[in-house]
Image 1 (cartoon, rainbow, N blue to C red):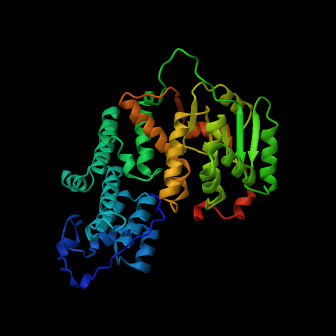
Image 2: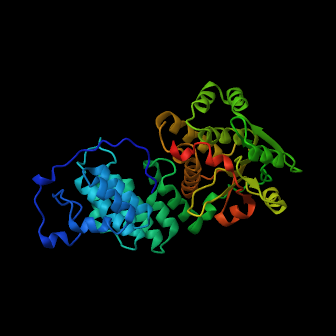
Image 3: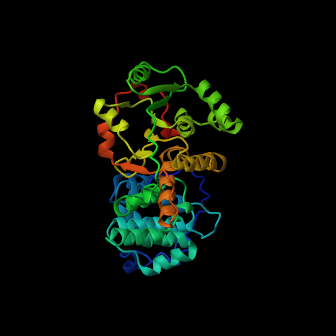
Length: 407
């Protein structure tokens, strides 16, 4: 789990005032609704199985909810899911259960229950009931994931989860897990509505962006794609992109673009606007079309929207294709503006990056499940296809310029 750059309002706890647990109590996992806020030996042992978590604990201890949350995230990221579940449970237990205390109690509990599922353990009905009392969509989410992962009816799982992803920022883990169920159990939900007219094909256009003064490897990449026969090519710089956004979308679009925190965020914002007007293929400046076979792949696509996934189910926004006025692109724009206005400091991948695409596909699937299909269809390919089509060539500039991950 990525640790989002939220501001945490952390209380501290005076553990000396708490009842000291017995030796027997120290050897088992405390109940998440226990009154004690004491850190038990059992919980410390879960932390110490992971070197990174152990180092954090040795340096910082657990003085508040934020410390416990950070440790749980470290364990989760390092695939110590059962241990992470215990420490998310600790964070929940010492949480004051106030609605102004972040992360919220329900966020900690749903993370615990999801980690239990990942470790192969079924959450108890008691803990799900506690979660349901705090947030009904969160409980539906956990129950639906459990249904799907146990080999149940995928459509039934989706109906149970409903649109619980709306309780989360775009791009959080629920978006990838929900889309995974769609693609495994009900990919037809992403098909377009049948109609007599011939489907519109993705235009043979390639778009790129670099803000200013492209380094040598990027300039060569522009030239490479400019010379591809049968495809129009256009590379925007910052000045041209700002004027294009003003001309086509107005002063707000230009302002949000110019106020982006990093060139990668600016490129994220621009790409959806460009492909909504022209259609075509967006390609990040630091990757290239691999070969003629890849070009044939692009030219042969019959769906109006084509997306490819990373190995962990995240939609690539560095390479995708759509028709003009795509229903998916329209939904991406909705999330882009919402995030820019309401969540300016959000992690870039969630705010403007792949997260808005994952959310758009999930909304499309959920509407389709309710009987409301859009005309344009979506085709989604896995990470193996991405690697066959795209060459992620060496880019020395990344060793010099600040990474978007640092924003």
